[in-house]
Image 1: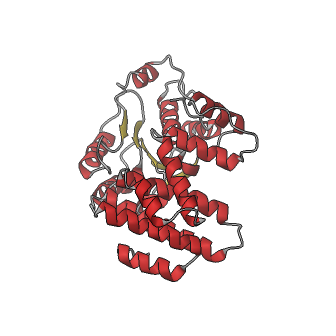
Image 2: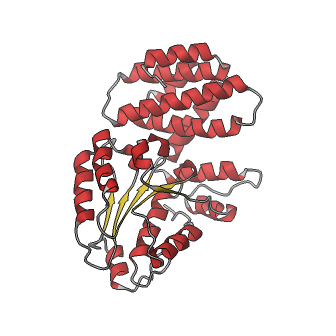
Image 3: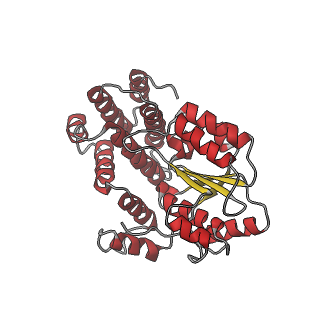
Length: 321
């Protein structure tokens, strides 16, 4: 996979804060479509831990070499375990214990929480205790595709930083190096960024499938049964996650459109998918067939702008938003 572009200005800002001894204890990193979150979080960590305080690390000092060898004693990255849908409370408690320890290489202890929006409620509560009572000179760097999925208590204790979309030529280069081929100049910058976000995921074709099915259902090019037959072959959590990404993109495109009822219904769909995704990450195991079919039915209702039918589908799904 090609390396994602880095927000150079953001890293420079972080280094300036460090030199002025004004680094916050917690930062929430967000980005359009979640693109390049991991790469930027890693680059920020490497820069701040570098002995020379060099952007993306000097590569020569002892901390930089330890970072590259994954043996830096003052750095830890926390993410959901392989095969798990969420980040558990035991993982968070262990990471918080790490933050509380005395630093070994320099003045800063740094913890990255990759996909913080995937934390269970107990895990988020465990992290909150550390955020409320920060330990020494430490920085907790959270990344989140869906920052709204984080508890308000977590968000309120973090400084939020938005990763700016890379320049068009960098996105085109990323797509080319990712094996996606050349991009037409007619493709908008917005669509180009979305394509790059798809390519960054391990299964970009799945995100494209969800996107095409959402569009076809909304525009009534296919019916519910046809959509279900395609999505039924995929993992439930991935299906809901990908449809949520696609819905956010569609909401952005429809925001200036005259069809107010459809936009309102799309916003309802976004809330429903977000609520379902949270449930799945917390361990809920609904019958796949019924859940996916009901979601496909809901999307078709959204396409018609039928708010009454959307409300009934929400009731059947047990969603109160």
